[in-house]
Image (cartoon, rainbow, N blue to C red; front, side, top):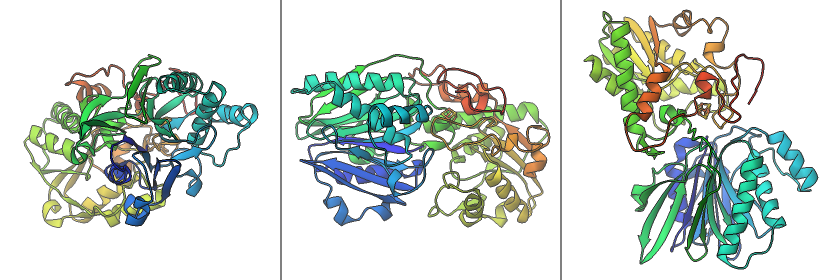
Length: 484
Ligand code: SF4
């Protein structure tokens, strides 16, 4: 999962792209980058948090009113400077893109790009392959003079991308002298929202993974880039858009469970409200399943689960308590690449509050249980400070399958439900060290996301929960291999 943005402005764009990477920091802490253009490309990128990568002096060198940005969270490719986005090529025009998602037919596309296209790849990043497929289509198909002609050419090129590139991809891009573009894969797996603002009589445009920066930057939300849609804003601010293909809409349900910031509205569904409903549905299920078990306090595994825990506590009539204090200056554990780093950082990041926990029956609400190490560590910490009993509920159903669309759930073996004995759900409470473990049911999660709002989500992607991989639609029944 990454964060991307693209802005067309009537003012220098770099300061606002910087604000965008800060507001999308939760989507990836490994690296950040910005590219802009005036008469040539300007770029600055590096490893680490946005605040460490960018300084006042390099922001001021990023000239131009049009640009794109990227927050990196690695799902494909090695991890180093070369993989930091945006990526760019000088043939034709000078094109740069920022990509959120993951491409599943990478190997096949690499051979097409390197053999047929005779292009050299600098990295193992799937984004670079996507860039070259797009660039090659633009190079082959003409030399447009007007914006209308360029949009037509872009439509052709992106249609080819849609037919060749399988997987999840939301993209923002710039073309020197031509403008800004954005498109979203035909199933809309990864989010891409859009906004507009009046700027001295002209209109500025923004496209981003989430609308989390719109308010502070004065942009009005204008909905989503549709699945299979291409939007192009030319150098003079004229906007063109076309939905090039129409397939079933399968947005990632895990965005609502974990990834997106609670104040985001994705695919016309408010993330905060969906998490409240996850907590409500979970509480209803708890009351049915354990009518005689009442905890003394409900505490969230901070901080993604805060919203669901609040609703859960309210529904079962138990006090909500911030029994685990979170140090916000340490990165998200799920995003950290190594398991060792993840486990170690849990204790650095969370401190159990003795006065809230000692001698009590504690119910912990977490957003999800993926590898289980963070959950196990949290349970241990709560027990360390004298909890009498510990119950654990997950706002997400069991994560049973890897994700091949951009979230770091790479192998069956790493998922706790598939660990030795873990596949027997009766044993999981022992593995986690809790008295009761309860998961959200899949239908209750879907209900929580889709209950309200004027949206078009009928079949969200839930491949990591039910094994139904939406690209190609095949079902994975076992642990033998990837069949997507
Ligand atoms: Fe999201 Fe899971 Fe689908 Fe991956 S498999 S896109 S995490 S719902």
